[in-house]
Length: 368
Ligand SMILES: NC(=O)c1ccc[n+]([C@@H]2O[C@H](COP(=O)([O-])OP(=O)(O)OC[C@H]3O[C@@H](n4cnc5c(N)ncnc54)[C@H](O)[C@@H]3O)[C@@H](O)[C@H]2O)c1
Ligand SMILES: [Zn+2]
Ligand SMILES: [Zn+2]
Image (cartoon, rainbow, N blue to C red):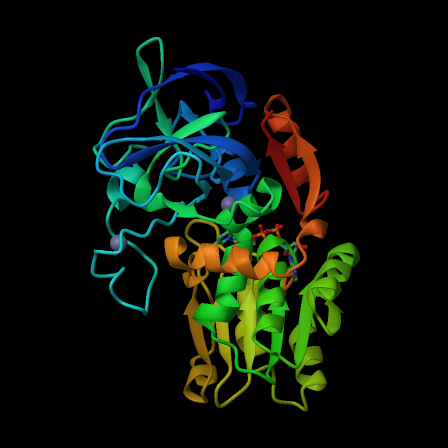
């Protein structure tokens, strides 16, 4: 079938919206009609050419929500009409990692996904016979996508698509960092560094876990106000001296849990240093630049602080994304402030511009 898609032709160039060919779903695959898709830093990072593992031509986008249109052979868990959220982090429910509660890093399709292929090593998108690769296994800057069944979470049809798509990446990452990775205990003091989609999700996750005090640190006063809306009790403008201020606010000890959601290694260090001696746990969600390292004085670890990393918030997508969406539907999380711009697919490059200008939290592409 023919569909419109935003194609990355050359790194550093705007995406080109055009008609491409999409093949039928094969065994274990599903055809999804997209209704909404968030524009994320990772898309921009790849489009700019900064990501050394990027490839072109490719259809970017990985924060999709839509409806199953058709299923290929051997698909058992999804049927036409189901509402789904795309998962760049799949869940096969069979590999050694899927069977272990300690991790969400499914091993089933990693290699082919990293090459821009579907699990059988081929692509479904093409143009005049030339293959166009998929991105993060999703390629959701398009009217339709074909994805593996194991990379789709079936969610409540009551969730509006523009909110459901937020669960595909940053929001679940932040919520999960607090709920899964850190497993914040009720009554705790938390400090969240960064108030973008991931950091705001972490603030909400700390609140849902029953944290008593949530300190949020960011450079932008507007973003700090959004953090207040998600449950932050103390707002701090970041920069030098942030660790000292958090120590002062916590009787000299530091926070029980800290979260880093900026991608800046200097802030990661602050997040480690602001964690409490004895049991403070620092959860790192930000993605640092290639080759950058985290500088930590080992004594901080010997005296009881720990550091954990979190990919997609430790969320096992097919099991947990639907549950998170249900918590949103029951009124536990307010997502209205996160969708700041609604754009058509043709305006995709405007979405990148808004993100570079830090204008709003999420631009969402809506499909007619
Ligand atoms: N681990 C994962 O699975 C995963 C998933 C999605 C995103 N990420 C990563 O998480 C990070 C955050 O993503 P996002 O979408 O929320 O980004 P974002 O750019 O929207 O938010 C980052 C925030 O950090 C703030 N910031 C910058 N410097 C700061 C400082 N010195 N002190 C305090 N705050 C500071 C910015 O003002 C901004 O509000 C990125 O590195 C992204 O790549 C990781
Ligand atoms: Zn993303
Ligand atoms: Zn698996």
